[in-house]
Amino acid sequence: MNTQVLIFDSEAHSYAAKLASMLPEIEFIPAVSETDALAVCSGAAILVGLAPYIPSLLVEAMPRLRWIQALTTGTDNLLFGMPALAPDVLITSLRGIHGPQMAELAILYMLALARDLRGMLGLQAEQKWLRRPQRLLWGRRAVLVGVGAIAESLAVRCKAFGMEVIGISGRPREAPGFDRILPRSALTEAAAAADFLVVLLPYSADTHKLVDAKVIDAMKPDAILVNLSRGRIVDETALLAALQEKRLRSAGLDVFDTEPLPEDHPFWRCDNVIVTPHIGGMSDVYADQAIPTLVGNLRAYLADRTDLMKNVVRKGGVIL
Image (cartoon, rainbow, N blue to C red; front, top):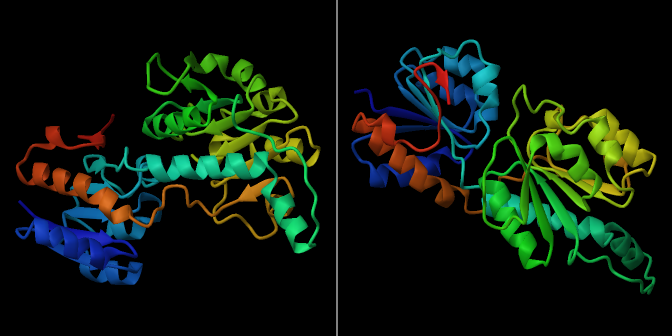
């Protein structure tokens, strides 16, 4: 079995060193740039990298490719936007490791926007002492659109702040930290009662602009929308209009329809929007979070036990 693994990532050398110490029987080839990767990729059967940044050109240059281990939860660009990728190439993700950082960013948005941190910093810059009541998370209702591992992490943290947590799921389920979980058909009704609407589900044809003008228009004027999943799940035109017209209090946005967000996009200039550059899944201990899944999947692959691999997204041409 071909056990040459190409690691394409800005931290590729660190990953390669850590993995090689645990799996000395595998040859790990680190590549930081696309040019470096193209120069050494032809013999590798396994590709490890951040899915959104894996270029089609690299996949085309890997005739022996049999498996892609994404260093992300999302793999939609591999599944739906890369014709060069052979359908029988196995795809696995890192679903399940991003809960702490995603949940903390959501809480950061919620606190900063609810308490108007931007206004506080403005008063500090002007050396103005102005005391005013502070809006609490306690007693507020958070509606989490998507009930996966990330939402579960956020739900537990919201409960610690004394919040009511409602989930919106595409299928019936139970999960810790939720007061209720409603079907997707109840999204508009739930949004109308939300103090915070947090979008956390994966992108697909079924979720394209799921949070549309109808959902946004149903929200209360003092509600806050947070999107940490994919820009295309939210109707950005409808959201922008609601924010500019003050029909919606504010929004925390980490993902966008076009990334990087164009310099002339109005979101940059909205005083009721916090824009971050798709950092939700990042952390200062990301490799430590990722290594256990990588090692487990590599060992299963070497043993020809793909049935034991975690987070299989596509196998034998079938999207799971």
